[in-house]
Amino acid sequence: MRVAVVGAGPIGLACAWRLAQRGHAVTVHSDGTLGAWHAAAGMLAPVAEAAFGEHRLTELLVASVRAWPAFAAELGDVGFARSGSLLVGVTPADQAEIARYRSYQDSLGLPVDALSAVEVRQREPALQPGVRAGAYTEIDAQVDPRRLVERLTSAVGAAGVATAGQVRDLSEVDADVTVVAAGCGTAALTGLPIHPVRGETLRLRGGPKLTHLIRGYVHGRHVYLVPRPDGELVVGATSTEDTDPRPSAGGVHELLSDAIALVPGVREAVFTEVTVGFRPATPDNLPIVDVVRPGLVVAAGHYRNGIALTPWTAERVVTLVEAAR
Ligand code: GLY
Image (cartoon, rainbow, N blue to C red):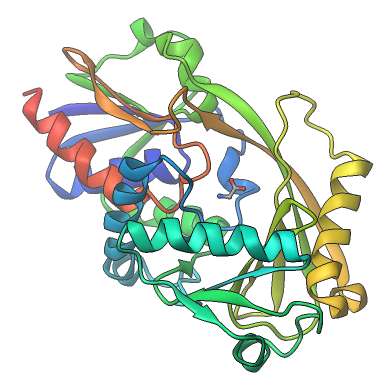
């Protein structure tokens, strides 16, 4: 089949790659803008990111994260690392929040262990001494979304995928099946209810050595720290409904002060970047990966989980496209 994929973020590229591997003639349409993936930290964290009431999403995340090692191995160096997550809190209320999450995660059958203060500090000596207890899960991992896009771009090129420019209206596309994977831009193309949720992430270098993803609760706020094996540290993320593409002083302050509250040595790190991204959110936080009408498949609305759900989405889209034959 002739398949057009609209969108060249990880989701669009992974769909194009898998479809080309199946022998379809694929063209990727892109407007060249950087999507949410450019800000994303690349947490593959179904346990640390499990949210109350989102059982279906957690199931998808667990399935996709299990597919990640083979997916990464096929692509080459995308910064995949099985870091595991530590969930830690600063105040007694933050620690109580972790205990509440842990019982929810337990109820879903997710592997998560309570850790004593000694065990937390053995795992991450750079955490501030006031972090008295927490939890650990081994299944959470990470990739570098920017390397992922680089590797996928090479992979689609090698698989013979063609490239074309921006699509403003789907009537411009000449294909047997069109896959819209345009993140927040999917709403304007399809009318589906996908709206932007703004987030800021920070990048630092030369800070304290950390080996786990750290999911922290600091005075009721959430913060995460993703230490890359190459020494970069990504700190995220704010979450607001405004649409300003410029970073805010308040967002940077909040993320830095929460990161320093958890890991005081972050003070010594070199601040290299603040990035603003727009998560493509849906009303129920589930991605929309479905046939919308004959010849039109949508793979969008991945909200906080686009990187984690990339392998699952690409497999699902192949099935949907081929069923549209
Ligand atoms: N998945 C992390 C975030 O959206 O901030």
